[in-house]
Image 1: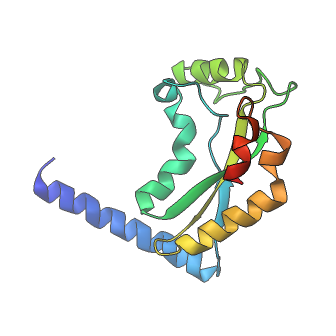
Image 2: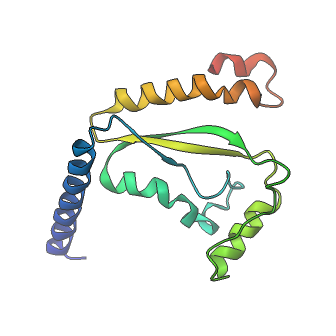
Length: 152
């Protein structure tokens, strides 16, 4: 990419960011709550195979917004192995199906985000959501003894 192409890309990003923030302000939003990812937590080293599931996260990285994820539930026995996919049955659908095969107990979360400079809003919303959901109390980490309590 040439320097000019890079600058043009940054200019396009800035235009998109301003449009997005204009809608955000128009609706007088404090914070956005969106899906975290399309799949539960992935196995170590497998992110590249299911990277498309993280597209929800990518939007806010692109916008240079403040964002954070909060686990809210886990995959239950009835959901394990269920993955409808996109209907294309391509390699991403196959990887998504593989990801769901042994997914019982894996966390699922949501993402909270706001424009740059609104970190305190996102952190407060994350804290409030954690207090309502009580994920750590319902899904105590295994093998840590009382050490996990220090992270509450």
